[in-house]
Image (cartoon, rainbow, N blue to C red):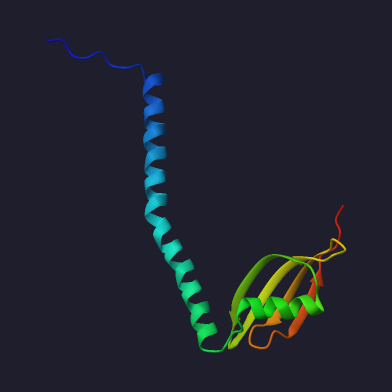
Length: 120
């Protein structure tokens, strides 16, 4: 029986790169679940804060925000800074200005309004 012919080194390299890529994807998959679990923990923590009365529900906050800083909401984040909960909301004003508003999440009081400078 004759041994199978050996592939030239040039043809073996793609196999090495393929194996390295497969290994990298496998490692990424192993690391992904903790990141997803962390997001779920944040979601649960925010829900508990609303249920405990530490934070106003988002629809209430958005209704109050529209009276003071009207615009189309693009993004909402709920953050905890020490004992204070903060809603950080990005919106586009009717004039087309990208604006970031920070509100006390317990009272919906506007703490800061920062309009992004036009960089055209």
